[in-house]
Image 1 (cartoon, one colour):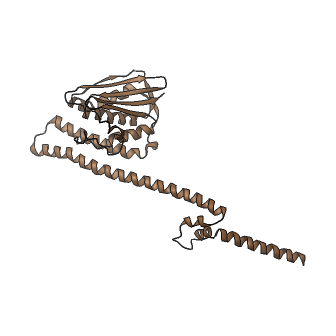
Image 2 (image 1 turned 90 degrees about the vertical axis):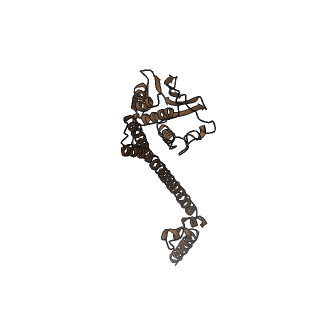
Image 3 (image 1 turned 180 degrees about the vertical axis):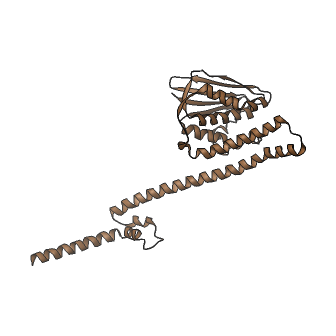
Length: 290
């Protein structure tokens, strides 16, 4: 008889324990069983159970992480869409010029090369914007000769330099090497060089490219003597689609060049700094850690 009483008491206590547990976690069970498809996991926080609170904390954190990830993808998609609208609009200009030349039979070699260079620059910008999304799968860190790479970039822009009568002076030590990705640094240097060329005064021919070496870092400096950047615009030059008041007149200004440069150099853990004085020019410095 005593044994039966003990069993019955144990069953009653187990039933009470299970009932109290269910009651304290009923919202959790409701969500898990999906009795109501519209039920949000947030109702779990109404439970008194510590387990429910812990599960709610984990699910809430995952929800916030997914929301931030989706928001980042949406922002990236919007950014790409805006860029493509502007890019396509600006690419129409050199195409229209080439069509006019063909229709009028007034095809001049240098003019054709100027327009094809603009097309090439635009395509390169669009390609690297697309590649930047998968940056961490598309870079190789190696020792790169700074002078050799800079000379290569200058040679690639030789036609643009001659056309604008800008003659760069490269003063970089032959034995200066930096650890970087060659393709992305080359792209960044090309964008900086093109900006220096585009915004240099027609009467100005100077462009200095030189290096400085310190104990813990190597600096590459590109100094032009162009129109300069207004002080209030300097903090914004790396923002997407930003074009200062003095650069909006340029049909090539997409406002994305320096933005992509900054993202690429940040991914490579290089530092870029820009100083400028209106009417005197701009100094762009890239700092590499040793």
